[in-house]
Amino acid sequence: MPIIWVDADATPRPVRDVICKAAVRTEMTAYFVANHLLPLPPSPFLKAVQVEAGFDVADNVIVQRCNAGDLVITQDIPLAAEVIEKQAIALNNRGETYSPETIRQRLNMRDFMETLRSSGIQSGGPAAFTDRDKAQFANALDRWLVKQRKP
Image 1 (spheres, one colour):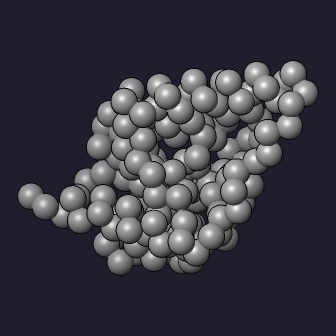
Image 2 (image 1 turned 180 degrees about the vertical axis):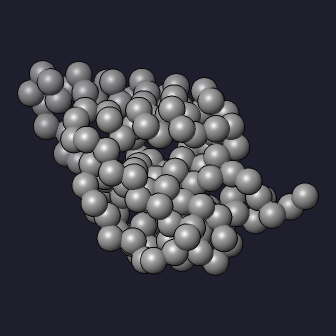
């Protein structure tokens, strides 16, 4: 059975709550990987994996442990690209599923924005997380969960 892996350092609490409820409801294991202790409801299906602080430490653990068919929830574009190479599914916190076709474009845009920021141009951050984003994420997660139940 596939596993849900969560890049939990940057996951908004509403998304974490949706994942917890869905994992318990469907009895699917979800690992929350972060460099700090996360408060999770008591359940045999919810696992916190605390890693050392450091650049990409949590990402590296997820890449090492995930398998083809697992779901990885992240807004980290390079992490999404790596897990897609392992044939895992990558879903962001706003409900967008990354694909081999879209991830290259996202990596190029990320690199372009990084170049702008490093040259001193202010590009702003992501838009505020909204209830609509939470609903879109919950719907995308439910669609993936339904696919896992089909024989």
